[in-house]
Image (cartoon, rainbow, N blue to C red):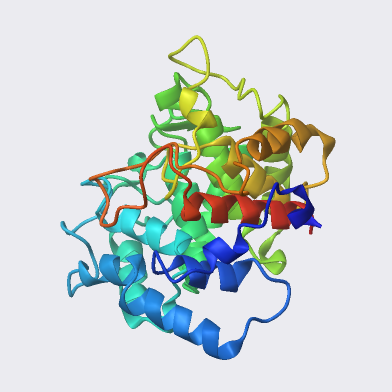
Length: 337
């Protein structure tokens, strides 16, 4: 059982009422049985009325965006892109607040293109793996059922396999790669045209959330390529291609909350465990590395944050952190499922 891998049981700590919202996440996700209905309802109500979910939604404009209209990539990290990603990681769902549905619809109307690309700038040329994966994952978690979302998954799968896409040197082709998303297998212009493991992790996390009935042969092929790439090296080393540096980013080893385009090793574990690779020996060292970060009370510290840049603060760096600890426990649970 996943709890046997902890130095102590942090669940009572996570089930405290403060900070508001973490009790809801723990009750919602960390127990195999159903929690006490009245306690769960109370925790959920608090999350939507007083917690980070409530704070983020209170800053949404009536039309459904945050701060600036349009595709919503900027300003970081309070515009619609980042607000929806954060809401998804906080456990928010459309069925509990109509404003979330309005925001998802706004995003699809202003950042989505007919061929399936989510764009940072509006046109399809603004597509990139980390954005596509982040938004596909977030919209599924939020409960979005818009058919355009499935087009986004198909585009994402094609960009991995190359199926049906022309090179970015053929601007008149009906469907092609672009300067950012520049080729198959997670190639990214921001990584000197080499495969980007941050982007790959986001894409695989999104695929892990896709209902099985939506996984057609194209998507299954993309998943296989992603697994082969992420497990092609020991994830604990993060020795993936670094286009502009001699060694991997140190951020791989810094656990944070929320998780935007900067990625950590824990998110690789989360994505691959959700895809059914939790018992794969190639993940062992990475899991052991994460487990070594816990303190004697079974808690994990916040090592990477967006202090002053998001609608809500999620704790002090280097201190035991409930949000990060939840991420670890949730991933461990899926690894042993």
